[in-house]
Image (cartoon, rainbow, N blue to C red; front, side, top):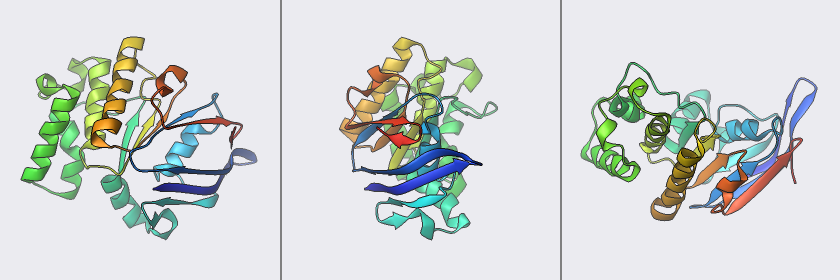
Length: 217
């Protein structure tokens, strides 16, 4: 379980998150909605260990974030968390296959049979077998996001975090990507937290959280 207790965050004198508490169980998909500036991305970054809260605690599957050293945090992020952003952040000089496998190479120089088997399963599920040898600049925006999702899944993360993943996609590709998240939840039992402005993309969520002025409504 992911558990947040009394999370608060300020930038200078501006309060961004005000005493946020929530729980996310295994295999749940949670959507976070709210107007711009409501604290959605800040909350996701705290959950993703990309930013520290000023107060409160985060616990994932029995491990407290506050107990980890900076070195341990980097390892934890790589092994336990998967990230998908609005801007796919793919490495332009590497092929799609290399981009997907990059997190694995951080922890090991050669891939074992289990790694390769998971890679094959992911690319089959996402339908990106035909673009693996291409550079990101040679594929569409929807395909780029699928590659980014594959990269996020390659380490078998306990938690997939998606920050406006459909923000740069047209309606068709946005719905396709959301359908993929629904499949990952249903078939892979993947735990997902997604920040979005699009209420249409929350229909299969187990929880829909509305943030406004740093508070859950």
